[in-house]
Length: 141
Image 1 (spheres, rainbow, N blue to C red):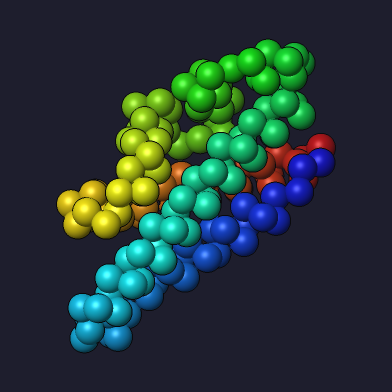
Image 2: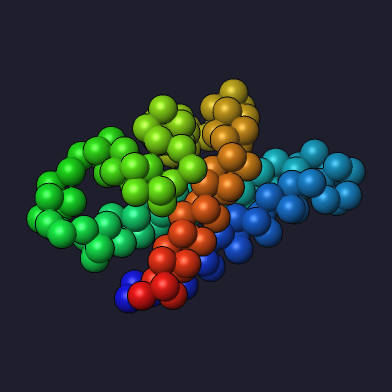
């Protein structure tokens, strides 16, 4: 059984960060709003990294050939996860998450920060789904 508590904690942090961006405090103070957005982007980075690592661990643990999973490209891993019903979306959507994650080091650029931030709500749905699928399947064993 795979311990997914780190993913659960990351999801909670991302949820909290996003809720702060919608708070009265953020609406009243543009500087605070920018800080909350930056915190959300940072939480997204961490959660994204954990999500695909957790997907890989789960597939290695449940597939007949763990070595095959180990040798997969990121794109193949996502496609396999989607085929197994672990993800809401396949590569077409995950490609946007990957691009957003790749551009987070450039969030000093306002356009880039806005673009990355706009992906976070959909990504949050995706990663919650992954967590729930892993939980459900592990409890069924």
